[in-house]
Amino acid sequence: MTLLHKAFRLNLLHLGKQKRASLAALASLATREANRWATVLHEQKPRTRTAFHHLAYQGLRDAGLPAQLACDVVSQVWENRKTRTRVYRGIPLRFNFPRSAGHAQTHHARPVLTIATGVKGRLALPLAQDGAYDRYTDALGAGFVPKQVRLCATRKGLRLWLLAESEVAEPAVDGTLPVVGVDLGVRTLAAISVVRGDRVLEQHYFGRDLYPAQRDAGLRRSMLQEARDTGTMPDRARRGLRRLRGWEDRFTTTRCWQVAHQVVSLAEKHGASIAVEDLKDLRDAPGHRKSRRKTARLPYSKFRSSLESLALERGVPLVAVPPAYTSRRCSRCGEMGQRKVAAFHCPGCGYLGNADRNASVNIARIVVGAGKHGPQQLVSPQDSHEGGRVNGPVGNGDGSGGVGWQPYSSPEFKPPVSTGSR
Ligand SMILES: [Zn+2]
Image (cartoon, rainbow, N blue to C red):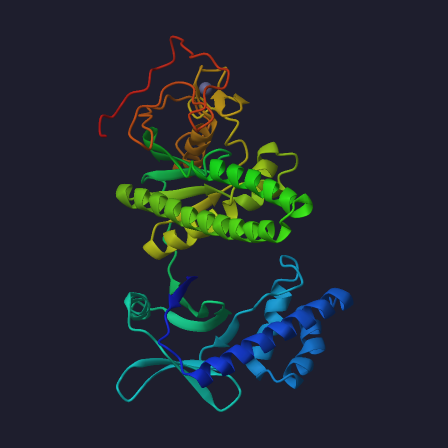
C-alpha cells in the first residue's frame, strides 16, 4: 500500500471584514516570524530539526502564534532551508486535520471549513459550492482523507488549498503484457515506445515544446538581467524577471502534467505497465555524461513525480529501472552503438534512429525481459506523435535539420513499416 497525495484548490465565499482582518494579521505575523527564524537558522545553524524546534518554538509562541501554527512555521523554515532565499514574501498558514482544522455545516447546511487561529475558538470559512468543491467531495467519497489546510494571503485575496491523501494498492508490473518505455530525453521530455514481446507497437515523442520554450526564456532572462544591472529602468526589468519566472513555473508544471496524462492514457489503452529511468541512479552514476545533462536542464523530477502519482491514481503499474547502458546499446541487436547528438547508430546491424527512441525501447525491454541483449529484429512502426511517418535519421527534434548522418542503407536494414492506423 502506498499513500497517494492530492491537493485541491477550493474557493471561499466572501469573508466579513473582521475575519479578513484577523487572517491577514495572522498571515503577516507568521511571515514576519518565519523571516526572523530563517535568519536565526542561517546564523546559528542548528543541526537537526528538533534542535531548531527547541530554539524557535517558545519565541514563536511568545510572538502570539497558536501552538500548531508555531510548529508549522518551524517546519516550513526548516524544509526550505536550502532551496529558498532567507526572505519570505509570504508563507501559507497551515492547519492540520483534525487538530486545528475541520469540516462543518451552517444551520442552512452550507459547508464551512473551521480553523483554529488561536484567538476566539475556531474561525469558520464558508466554502463556495462550485466545480472545485464537487471534485473535492468526489475525492472524499472515493476514499481520500483531508490532512491539511493551506491558506495563502495574496494581493488578490486569500487562496485556499486542501491537501488530502488516500491509501492505494500498488499494482504489480507484468512483463508479459505490453510495456510503455519512457526515456527522459535531452530535446524531448519523454520519448515513448510501447513494446510487447519483441514487437514495438507504438512510438511517440511527448513534450517537445519544453526545450525551445526553456531556451527562449533563458535568452529573455539574460536580457532582463542585463537591463536590471545596467539599464535605465531597473525596476521595470525586475518586474519583468518576476513575471518571467512565474510564467516558466506555470508552463513547466502544466506541460509535465499534460505529458504525464498522455503517457498514462497510452498505457491504459494498451493495458500496459510503465517503465521509466531511475533518476537516483542517473545522478549517482559516475562520469555518466547523460546524467549531468539530464538532471540539470529539463524538469525531470517534476515530470517523474507527476507521472508516478498519476499512474498510482489510475491503477497503472509503474517501475523505475536502472538506466545503465539504455542509451548506449542498440535496441535491435544489443551491440554497443555510437551516439551523435540526437542520432544513434549501431555498427553491428546498421540500425540508425533517434537516440532517445532507441533508449526508450531498451528501457521497456528491461521489463519485458524479452532477451535484453540477444540478437533479434524488432519490427518498428515508427509513427510520429503527429501521425506522420518518421524515417531514418531524426534531426534535432524541432525540425531544424539533420545531425550529420547520411541516410543509411544496408541489406539488413529494413525500411520502417507503417501500421496505417493513423
Ligand atoms: Zn544493432
